[in-house]
Image (cartoon, rainbow, N blue to C red; front, side, top):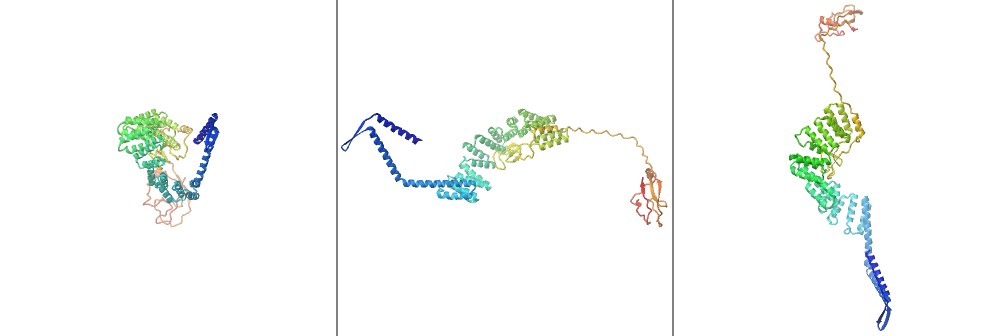
Length: 549
């Protein structure tokens, strides 16, 4: 653009000069070798301009002829370089697509057209081709050579870091990341990897210092940097809570300044204040966080802050939390639980029902089952709420990378990612959440309270029981012609064949009278009372069979 403007200005200046001469005519006389030459000023100016242009043209032709060998060499060298870069570009595209054969072919062509010392990307193409072919040792050597060159050091360390992680050599990977972070803290991948490594090993101060360097280098946003620093300070405070409550309190309060809704930091600060017997400041910290993000762990620490409180006192503290955040499911659940401990079943039931209508979940229905069991002992209603708990969504917990934890952790145990845990419902729920209609149906189908059965009055005992008259039992005895003796008395041996039997009806006295007249003969020590058993000393006893009518 500047050259064009300069050319335009020069043309305008020449045109202005010729116009100025045209307005001022004159004659120019020149005496050269005894000859007088006269011409006008316009002609003289035109001759001078033509001579200047001719001289410039001749100079350009001379320079072009003089520098033509160098220009030819430069042309062919540029053409060769362009072909080499074209081969290099095609090879990188082939390596990215996974075409090892094309990548190798383009690598050889690029090496023949471009010097590897002049273009470091050839080393990268060779390493990528080796990775595609599965030659990991060769690729590692290429990356190590790149790491030694100041121009390609960062690229080589990046390749070594990725290969170390792929092979499971986490210590080597962290070493490469630490080296890259020390030499180039502006690299996001190196800073993130080094930060996770220091956090995993508990080097909280080094991690905070590295995070400050990243923030100064504008590697990450200010809000993200402050959040991660608050997480690191909370983890540091958690480690110092047992041995140094004061230091843990200071770190937790600093974390709360950076992230006001960080629940673990508030809990650690409150516990530190409680150990110092400063319940007022502990309550103030918990209340400030409760106003922003009600959390059941905050409620648990707040309600049981003073160990000597009664159940009524804990209920009052729970109601204070409810006053800070009314119509909140966590507030209602906290009050319902405290009311159950205080045996105020009506309040516990009303708060639990309100919480269930806002957000039905497992713990709320289990609490309602506990209320029914403690107040009425009605197992039907208890089983009803237990069934609703099985269908309800699961309670929120600390979840990171698909892993649920009972307590908050600064890093993920799966990937090592910092600030990975979130308070939400865990995954893997079989059935979907209950709808509002289902909640209404659950309350509508609640069975009524079963009334306890009234015990019956005992029947009066009669003064005297009259004896029952037993009518005589009539039996039919099948007997022989000879009279049959009682079976308890041994019978004499019979040699003659028994006569034909005949039936005869006889009267048998009542059982009571028979028991008075004859005492029962025990089985052991006497003969068996089975008519079919032979008696000693006789071949065959008369057969007697009784039939009761």
